[in-house]
Image 1 (spheres, rainbow, N blue to C red):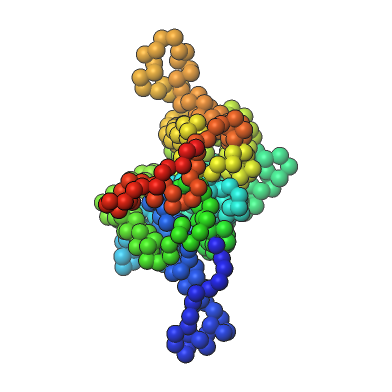
Image 2 (cartoon, rainbow, N blue to C red):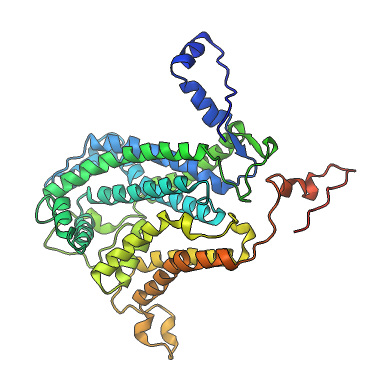
Length: 439
């Protein structure tokens, strides 16, 4: 999609700057005049939404860091002090805490959209891999940020998660000691997590820049999955998509504001308003909601090392997805069988998230206990997690490779414009619609 620039400097300063640092030309070609497929729907607005979320997290995080004290004796009090004594500190803190959840809501929708429309397929493999790197950095940043308030769930969650690295052979013990900065979760751990939590968002911003660069080389994918054939298939990004994305961002910010102003603690845990106490363990240690599917995978396996490997393997599988899907058709609009399996995959992810937040010990699923033929032990959330975990890995490692070889896709349009131009509503009164092409 990159090519000849249509930018023409208008003022003397723009001409002077364009010769020395063509930053205005870059912005014009990347945002204003960038040719974009004209059939993008609202599922494609979440990239812009994610950029706004990142900006909010960076700004609010910098302000919070000015008042936060990374010390086990003062961290909890400093957070409460931000809420009570800093001007609008409650707003900044709630925006940052809920902003993390909004960030993950948007990124999960963005990822599922990419899976459905095949945005990871050639020539966009690097674009997809960079997106996975961003996701991995987000998870690390969010985990370390969750530890900083130094409440009960923060402290004990850090103990549980960091101990998982100890299960790794050879390097596990050394890695855990390095994360702790000692021999237990204590003040050095909090200092390291604060430092990394402050650093990683800027790394995310850098990878986002690479992600956008990788997007602008092949251009946007689109719901049909058909490559752009001519200029008639595209429109300039501005004003068409700036207005569309602006509207979607406004609606998303209304949802964001609803949580911040009306229910700011809905997505958190009450135990984190209790100061950390190493001698008192919460009845149920759970991570934040966006980690729950992976937490369910971890608990689904009785062996600690295997559970850790599967948990990290669930993310690692995403990196090699472009080579696992063997189908030549990008969009699942034209792959009815793959669409069905994809919907089951989404359901499996939701089930994993639900199970991750439940007590695993002999907890019977409501309603299933009425079936006498099913053993009571099989009704536990652990077994449901195992079934969903099996499907998660089967979808990527078995179903997608086989479907690409065996599935018969529906006929694809010749161009992006064809589905629109062949629609009766696009035919002027008195004119005759062009005959549809037969598959």
